[in-house]
Image (cartoon, rainbow, N blue to C red; front, side):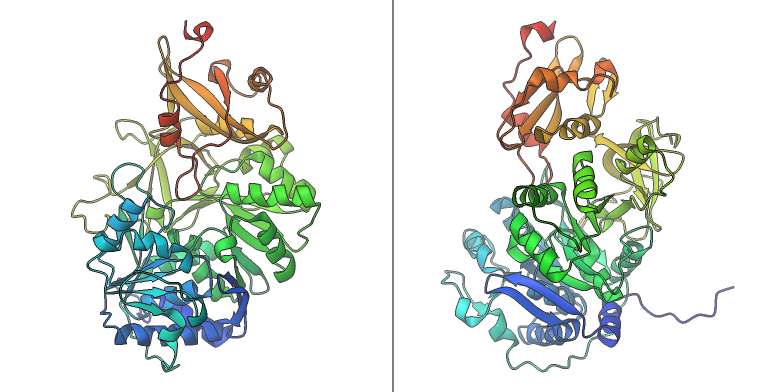
Length: 543
C-alpha cells in the first residue's frame, strides 16, 4: 500500500520560489572587483537570475549543458547558481586554484559550453584557451567600465548580457533527479573526478545542513560563507540561507584577508561564518594584532581540515565565539558530520575530547568503519578502520564513469581512517594514504598535529611518515612558527610526553617558513613528502 500524499519534486527551483515569496527583502551583501560593497535583496537577485536564464537561452544553451564558472563568492556567482540549475542547465563550479592543466582538463571533460569568469581569472583562462575548442564564449563577471582587455574570443560583459532581458522568466518544472551542479575533486592522484549533484540530492542536503544539530540557521542571522562557492557549493550555504531568509555576506576575492573579514563581521553584524582553519588563523591574527573585537559573531563552522584546539580556545576565550567542527567531502555534497552544541555539565576534559572530533552523522548519512577485509568494526572509540558512508546525497559513481564508486554492498569508501565512539562521534585519524605505520602499529598524524598547534609558538603543523630502517616508518613533525616566536624543537617534542603513547611521539621536528597547501586550502602532505624526499634521520635516531 502506498501513501496518499502529493508527489512534488525536490528541486532548487523550490528553494528560489520559497525565498522569493517569504524573504524577498532580505539582503545579500558582497565584495566584487568593481564594487567594494554591493548590496541588494533576494528578490532582486532572483529577478536578475531570471534575466540571466533568459540570456543563456538566447546564447543557445540547451537543457543539460554545463555552464562553467571561475568566480569568487559574490552576488553574480549567486545569480549563476540559480539561473543555471533552475533553468535545466548544470552549474559547473571550477576551482581556479588548481593547476592550469587540471583546469583545462576539467573544462574539456565537463564539455562546458560557456565560461563565466571573474576578471582576476581572465589570464588563467587565456593561457589555456587554445585547448578549449568546445567553449562557445566567455562572459566576464563585471560591468562595462571594468571589462579587461583580453585575447579570449567571443567575450561578453556580464552586465551587458543581462541588459534588456525580461525580468519574468518562466522556470521549467524539473525532475528532481535532473543534474543541478557539477564539482570536481582536487585530483591529488590522477585526473580530477567529477561529482554530478541532482536537484533531489542538493535539496535533501540543504535540509540536512539546516537541522538544529547542524548549521541551524535562523532568519534573523547574517551568514558569511568564507568557504568558496567554487568548491562544493560553499557547503550549501547559498541554498540554506535563502531557505531560512538569513542575510548573506559574501567576501568575494577578500576571503583570505583578516582585515576585510573583520570589517564585514563588524559592519554587517555577521553571526555565523564558515571556512577552513587557515581562514580563521588569518582572522585571529588580525584581531590579535589590532586588538579589535567581533561582538556580533556567535559561532564559526570549521571544515576542510582538522580544527586545532588553539583556534577553538582563542575564539571562545577572547571573543565569546563557539567553534563547530564539521567533516565532509566533495562526494558527499559535502556534509557528513557536524559537532553541535555540547551540554554545559560535561567535564572540561571530556568536552575537549568531544569537540576535537568531527561530530555526529547528519541525518541522511550512515557511517561505518571496516578493517582491511571489509569486516565491520565496533563503534567503541578505540577501533579504527576505513570510513565508509552512504546516503541520498552521496556520490554513486563519478561523472562519465561507467563503474560504480561503491563497495559491493553499496557503501562509499571515503579514503579516511577513523574511529566512531559509542555516542556516534566520528574521529578522523588520517587519510588512508597518510596514516603512519610504525613497527606494525598505526599512528594518527592528525592527533599529533592537534597537539602541536595547541602550542603558542606554532602557527601550523604537519606530521608525515618517514622511512626508518628499524620501524618501517616513524613520524616527523614539521612546524611553521607563530610570527616573532622562537621555537626550541627539543622542548616541542618533550611536550608530547603524557599526551600520547611514548612510541607515537615524533622522532624529529623541522622548522620551516611555509607548509604546502592544496587548491582547497588543506595541507598537502603529498607535496610535503616530495619537498622532504632527501630527509634522513639523524644517526642517533636511525638505530
